[in-house]
Length: 199
Image (cartoon, rainbow, N blue to C red):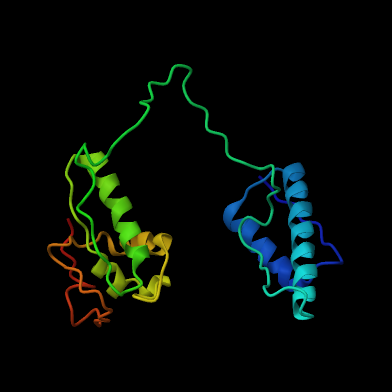
């Protein structure tokens, strides 16, 4: 589908470059949808710029920035269509089904992001294979800095998932136990970040 972009004199060329990149990497709208989304994006950009100008003057204590939701309006939402007669239980206790590992303790390390990532992966692996494997938070803490995580100083599940995908897997807790501190091993010196023992 061809994309048609209309330049607006009120938007800087730097911002247009960001818009063009987003369009080509993420969206493939028809001309009318593209035009509508562009107008929404420009309106949101103007709102961000107005807010940030006032924040610069001290009216607000925070600044806003554009993200990948910039062309959405508050009414945009994803609708899930279920079957006409869904057989949905009133409750599910995944612990009773054996799908949840034992409670883990992150200690003084700000690594909650790694525990939430491994918990999600453990549950997905159980649903797919019927096998419960405790996965290594330490593997993520030590090795996912390249994806933007910061060990014991925070991180994101999405970046942990990106690491696991790029690495081709993640170690089990048994093979790479939790230490509660960051140990940045050079990949060529430590098997934890290079020769992974995947579950």
